[in-house]
Image 1 (cartoon, rainbow over the protein chains, first blue to last red):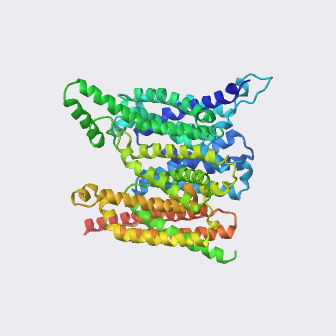
Image 2 (tube, helix red, strand yellow):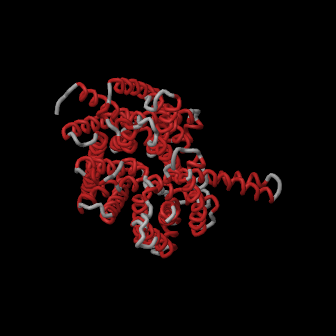
Image 3 (cartoon, one colour):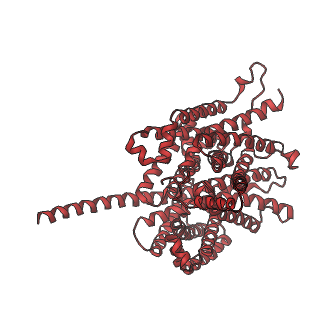
Length: 329
Length: 296
C-alpha cells in the first residue's frame, strides 16, 4: 500500500468528515452569534475524557467519547444558567464555566494517576491529524483497517446533516425570529435541544480526531467565509461547505509536503495549518465580496454604485439595519 | 507542608498576580471584551514558538526569557487588536471575530510548535510547561518582574479608571464628549495582554482566562461603582490565588493553576447562590409589605 492510501487519504477523509459535521452545524451557531460555544465545548471536554477513562478503566473510544459529550453538554447548560443569573453576558459565563471544567480536567489528570491515559498536553491542545492512518495489513481490505475515529466522524457528519435537513424550517424560524417561534408554536423547543446535542457530538468526535484548534476553525470559519455572499440560509450552508473543502485539502497538503514547499525539516502540524488557512480565508472572503459588490454597483452607473456599497457597509455596522444582520440577541 | 523561602515566594507572586488580574478583569468585563483574553492567551503561544526559533537563529539560545516574552506579547497584542476591526465586517460580530482569530493564531502556533519540537538543540524541553503553567518554578527575578508589572498596572488603572468607565458604559457619549476612545481601548488591550503574558507561566494558556474573568464577574454580582468593584475583584483574585497555592502545596499533586481556578470558581458559585437567595428574600419581603399596605 502506498503512502497516499495509508497516510494522506485517511487524514483528508477525517478532516472532510469533521468539516461536514462541524461546518454544517457551525452555520447555526454563527447565525445565532454563539460561535464561541465551540471553543468552550472543546476545552470543557477534558474532565469528561479523563472521567470516561477512570470509570471504565479502558481507553475505549466510546467511554472517552461518552464522557466528553456529557462534560461538553453540562458546560453549555451550566453556562446558560450562569448567563441568566448574572447579566454579564454569555461570553463571560462561557469563560468562567469552561475554565473551571478545564481546571477540573487537569486536576483529575494529575491526581488520579490517569497519566497513563496518554493524554499528551500538546496533543490535547493542538491535536494531530497525523495519528489517523491505516496500518497496512495483507489480510484485510482498506476499509476494514480504517481507524475508529473515521467511523465516529462519519456518524457525527450524518447526524449533523440529518438534523439540519429534517428541522431546517424550525431552526431557521428560531434563528431569525425567536419571539414568533414562541408565540406561533411553529418551532418547538426540542428542535433547539436536538441541535445542541448534535453540535456537542460533532465537536467531541472532531476534537478526539483532529484536536481543539481545528474544531474551533471548522465550526466558525466556513460559515463566516460564506456569510458575506449568502442570500439564504440554505445557500450559506451549501456555500460554506463547498468553499471550505478545497481550502482544507490544500492546507493539508501544504503541511504534509512542507519539506518540498517551505523547505521545512519535516512535515508540519496539519490541524494547525488547516485552521490557519480557514481563518485567513475569512477576511479574504470579505475583501472579495467588497470588490465584487463594488464592481456590480459600478455597472449601475456613476457614483451611485460606490455610495451603495458604502451604504451597505454602513448598514452592516448598524445593528438595526433590515438585512440578515438583524438578529435578536 | 513546609514554609520554605520558595513557598513564600510562590505565595506572594501568585497572590499579587491574582490581585492585578482581578482588577484588570473588571474593566475588561465592563468593556464586554471577556474572551479577548482567551484569544490573547492562545495567540501568545505563536509568539513563544517564533521567539524560540528567532533566538536559536540569532544564536542567543531559544530559551532566552526576554525574546520569548517579547514574542508572546507581540502576537497576543496583534490578535487582541485585530478583534474589533474583524468584528465590524458584515455578519461577523464579536463572537465570529474571536473564533476566527483564535483559530488562525492558535493554528499557526501549532504549526510553528511542530517546527520547534523537532529542533536539534534539545533546549525546547520546558516550553510546553506554558500550556498548563508551573507556578512552583517561580524565581526571585519573576517576583521582581511581577512587582514591577503590578505597580505599572495599578498606576495605569488609577490614571485611566474614569476614562475606561466612560467608554465602557456609553461609547457614543464618550466619543462626542471628547474622550480619547481609541487610545483608551489601546491602553486596556495593552493591560490585558501584559496580564495574560505574565500569567502564562503561573496558570498556563487556558487558565489565565479564569484568573481575569472569574473574580471580576464575582465582584460584579454586588452592585457598586466600578472602582469599588475593581478593588473587590482584586481582593477576591488575591484570595483565590492564595487559597489555590495553599491547596496545591497541601496536597502536593494538584497543579497550582487548576487549584487557583477551582477556588475562584467555587467563590463565584457561592456568591451567585447567595445573590439568588437574597433577591428571593427581598422579593418575598416586598410582597409581604405590599399585602400589609393593602390591609392598612
